[in-house]
Amino acid sequence: MSESSSSFLSSPFVAGFTSAVAVGAIGLLFMRKPSSVRNCSRITRWRDSPRSSAVLEHNGVVYVAGQVANIPTLAETGIEEQTKQTLAKVDELLELAGTDKSNILSAQIWVKDIQRDFEGMNKVWNSWVTPNSKGVRACVESRMAREHILVEVKVIAALP
Image (cartoon, rainbow, N blue to C red; front, side, top):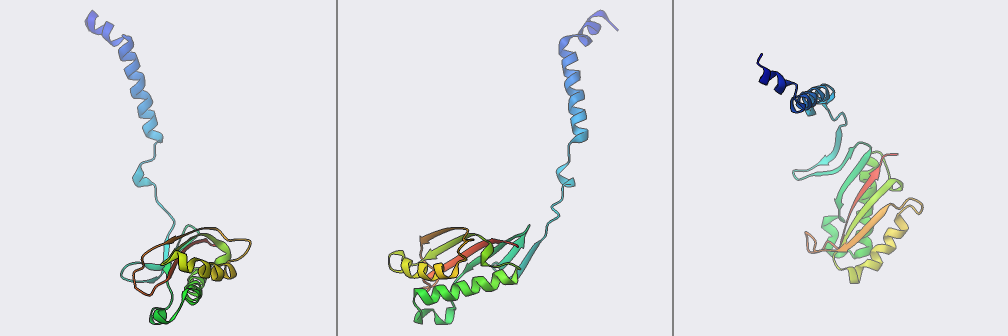
């Protein structure tokens, strides 16, 4: 080996580079490859339609899709009756997934005309919701998918 190559190999640059490569190689030995990490939880779905599931559970959390009152009777019902019917559907779907309204984490509510219907919807909601386990809630005004829908409710709940 020549004197110049010997001095290059013992230079601080090569020593630092060699140390970095060694540390990197050791790090790779302990690093998990993304392909070796598996999500062991399953998603359980109920009442699938071509667009979505009405309710599903994943990792102990139940997701209920937006629910509305009974479609055939929409034109004849006001906000209070539609809210009662909607919340009855929510109850049914929560039960199907193994939980109930006392485990609600979050609720989203859409009302067609918030000025006209907010008070009536809240009257029914307040008598339905479990007093000591309400979860968080948002309520906004929104155009609805059908003319006579006045309220839509979507909830997320924990399994007991």
